[in-house]
Image (cartoon, rainbow, N blue to C red; front, side, top):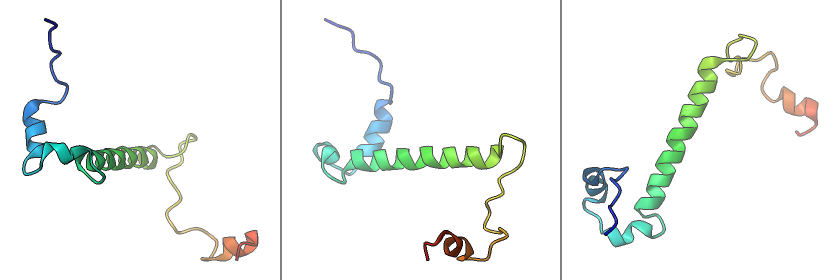
Length: 83
């Protein structure tokens, strides 16, 4: 009989995630799997934006897009002709 690989995610964590829910519903729309994918994607995107905001530009400048630019609000759209 083939050996079972040790689980990457501990069984205790899976039990905690499934507590109070039917494991059969985990694959349904808006089920546990969809919620986990959403949470993982949000965490990864937040980590990516935090990294970019902390490291700044390649030439050493810090992030300057903070909403305090030289153009008044709406001016850039008017100049681009998208108004």
